[in-house]
Image 1 (cartoon, rainbow, N blue to C red):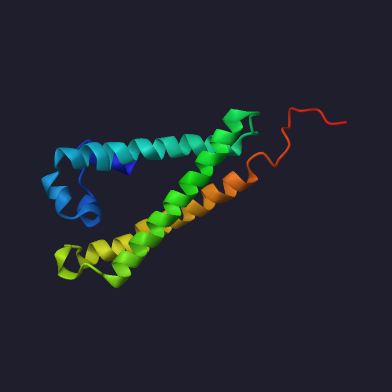
Image 2: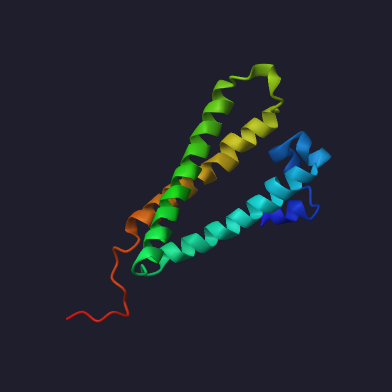
Length: 138
């Protein structure tokens, strides 16, 4: 995954995504922005896998479904908020966002947050609707 590559010292593509942080690489950015986001992506993969499986009974199933809806909401809110901020530029010159960063975020990164949010929402909605193939029906 790209975040782990960057966390381990790789730099290809990071400057377009992170701007000046790519050069400075402060400890908080490497720990939270690179390692932390990489781990969150892995956790999201596990949650997606759980949402694709038959729904467990009881509290476990409810927690998985709730987490699916939470991830859906976070990804969609993040997508919409960043899109609005980049398109309206409310901070003006106070925030240093290069035209390259703006383009890559709007054209490449942000659509994946939209798709991810929609997919998690659909998965959470469908979770538990399908019959468990191992259960016997009469």
